[in-house]
Length: 441
Ligand code: SF4
Ligand code: SF4
Image (cartoon, rainbow, N blue to C red; front, top):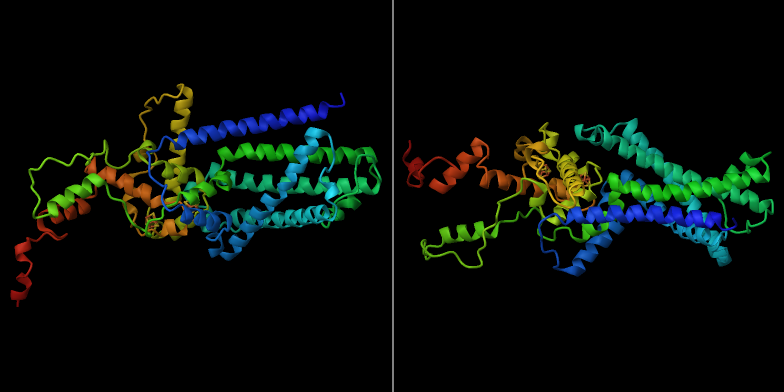
């Protein structure tokens, strides 16, 4: 019986981490459904980008208020969770505050965790007000209705509860230390939770122990729950922002990629020396399909992008198409890609890893042609994204499919492309007539 809490703790830990590992496996499998792409170049620059953008939050600070608040929550959450290590060791070994022998260093750590916990609470409240009271434009766009809105609020509630549990646990512990209760070693400093002490006036020692133990258990169970909630949430970005910024594009801003087969074809057309009847070069492999109509046509970095999207809407708030009332929202492009990828993943789960055609695809069932053709390819969305996501690349791949596989460009575009092909210019005039204007009176 003496070891029952330790055994129970070990079981809870194994279940929590086990489910998390299962979810990580699913995400990895789904991302691997994407086509291969070579991102092995310039590793030093990639590490630098990750350190600057994901760790240093450099793109968040562009909007100072939300950037600072986000930084507080991020730093607070990471650092406070160092204390989870102590909880895990205590839970497994049946000790209490095992790092207490660190002395003053321990006191400073616990004290700074408490200050950060308070700052996290302030930031979470500000975030909640921005979303639910002030209702910032980017948080109330059509794609944010339903689950995305609930998810954003749930994350704030969970963070708030975890921080309050942490402070309650410390306050009860501090009171028990002052009462000289067995097992509660004198350790830590409590600059914030000390103000909760009056709440324990008139409460028996046994009840305070119960409060301390309940807060301790709920805190660690809450953390394990949160860890598993990530998979279903936009909050997955706290993990994926790191690989995503590492694998982000190093190309010049806004550079569009060309298909090799098409490039070679055009080069051949432009080369006056080329033999139009020559057999194609052996390495000029033609792709099975031009562009993308479903998630499996995208590359794995684009799929990683979709899982990393924080749904912050910074891209949409900078998108000229969205700002002028068009249906396009780059955030929705990413959310749709993730939703469709999840749908494909569920089909695989239900059919022992085999894909069974469900008659649906990313194009039309999630993203419409109207959205795709509204894009000006200005690259503002990619520039604005705080975690190096590139919605434009998905839009361009899907457009490529529409043009090259479906000939489904708008009539204006089809006319322009026909003119370029026939007249060498986007206008419907023969090249021989180009200088006619000089004879006009
Ligand atoms: S590239 Fe397209 S989606 Fe991105 S901001 Fe510009 S118009 Fe909007
Ligand atoms: S793509 Fe980037 S900017 Fe747009 S919502 Fe997602 S995380 Fe935010």
